[in-house]
Length: 333
Image (cartoon, rainbow, N blue to C red):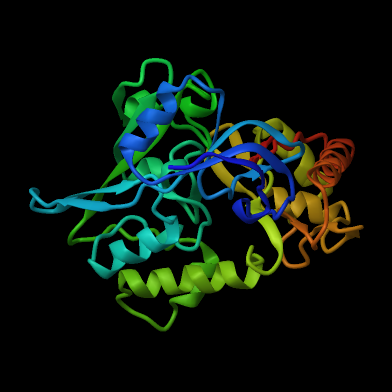
């Protein structure tokens, strides 16, 4: 374990933002993590770097988590409990589960990031969220250096939200996550139109076939961070009340929407942004992706401030046009 000085974080964030870390260390074991926490230094935790926008240098000790390993507890008839260490790549973990015929995560294929950060924002896609298969997680309390287990109830999951984004933000380091997955009688969630279209010629789809369709959909719509810097969906899909939706529908009868409850309607943020004319637009090296307006991109040398400025412009324009507030999903630092 070696602490390095003045390291560029460009390779460590999917936006490819070039900012400096005053100090940087890679952690490969729980014992190393405990030793770093015991130093009582101010820490900045970095995992897959997929859900952040860096707008300034980091003057703390950047801790790059590389905890790896998968443990299977196969004691139930219909379910299996799979524990993955925080540093496992999320998509690779999903692919591994599918290869074992463990069901529940297939709709979350190709989401960037690592396992350890997945519960923080309750990642989700195509009708499935982490909370649907989440069993528990272990996290190291920074103040005490003690390991604590969190149940699903204690995580207080919400839409792209959890206790770790709110009252416990910055207080714990998630070290592993355990999922309760199906071994048989899988409960597929394939009601989304694009998924149904992709499976139309398959009568009884397998986990892999569903995953392959999800991957194809995401690949067609979303840019590869290896080729163009991005953090996936930059904004949350706003949820509005029924009264506000009826006003919106009067002007835009074909506005896409999803019913959340009797009085709550979810509107795709990408559609709102596209209606405001931002889709495919470029402002220097910062821009909005040509295939998915929900994704902001770095064409090479954009700064975090430039991308954040674009995001604020989008928020203000959507507010002025529709009277709807867009909430940023990524962590702006």
